[in-house]
Length: 355
Image (cartoon, rainbow, N blue to C red; front, side, top):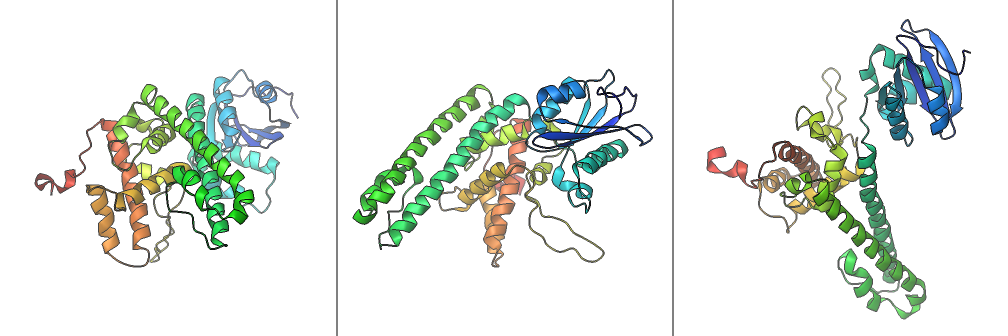
C-alpha cells in the first residue's frame, strides 16, 4: 500500500465503489497495473483528503444517492469524472463474484479502456437538484394523498357506502358527509390529513409557478401544448437542464425510457416493452399528459390525432401503446419547441400546405 495521498501519475485511472459508510478505491496506471488500493469513509472530508493529487486523474463511479455531491467534489479537485449508469454495466451488477473491492477495480479498468462502456450519465447542477427536489416532494405527497383517498373509499365500500366521485382536492370536503357513522371515529383523522396534504401540495404548486417565471422561462414555451401543465413543464426543463446535450430531439424519448427495448439476434427481433430508463417522475407526468390529450377533455391537435390513429388500429393493447407513443412524441416536440423557441401550432401537420 502506498501513502494515503495517491501517487502522482501522468495517466492514472481511479475506480470508486461508493457505499453508505465506506468507499473502496482502486487506482491503475496506463498499463493497467494496480498501483493503489484503499478504503475510506464516505464523507466529504475523508474523500477530499484522499483524492487530492497534484495531477488530475480520470475517476469513475457508479450513479447513486451519493454520486451527485461526490462527482462535484471530484471536479472541483480537477479530476475528469465519469458517472457510470449502474444498471447498464452488466459486468459489475451481474457478476458472480461481486465485491466492493472488485467493483472498484472493474470501474477503473473500464474507464481506462473506453469510458463509453460505462454508459456515462450527466448529473444536474446543485441548484437544479435543489429546485427539482420541490417537484419530487410534491410527487410524494400526491402519492400519499392517493393512498389515503383509496383507503377511505375502500373502507366505506365495505359498509355499502360510496363517497361521491370528485377531484382529489375536493374529496376531503365532499366525502366527509358520506362517511357512515360507524366509521367516523376511524376515518375523520384521515380526512383531516388529506386536507393538510392538499394545502401542502398547493404550496408546492405556488413555489413551482414562481420559480418557473423567475428562473425557468422556457417552461412557458412548453406550456403552449395543451395537456402540458406547470408541473410537467417545470420537471421537463429541470430534468433535461441543458437542451443542447441532445444532438437530435428524438434522443429525448430514449433518454426518458419511452422507447422499446431491443433484443434482436439473427432473424429474431421481438417486440418488447419500453426501457423505462431515465427519470420515472417525468416519464409518469408525460404519460399523464398523453392520457389527457386522448381523453374527452383533450382538444383537437396533431398529437391527439396521432394517438387516435394508433387506437383505431385495434388490439387489446392499442390504448396503452397509443399513450406511450404519444408521451414519447410529446417529449420530442417539447424539446424542439425549447430549442427553437417556436410558437406551437396544434394542427401544423394537418394544414393543407403541410399535408
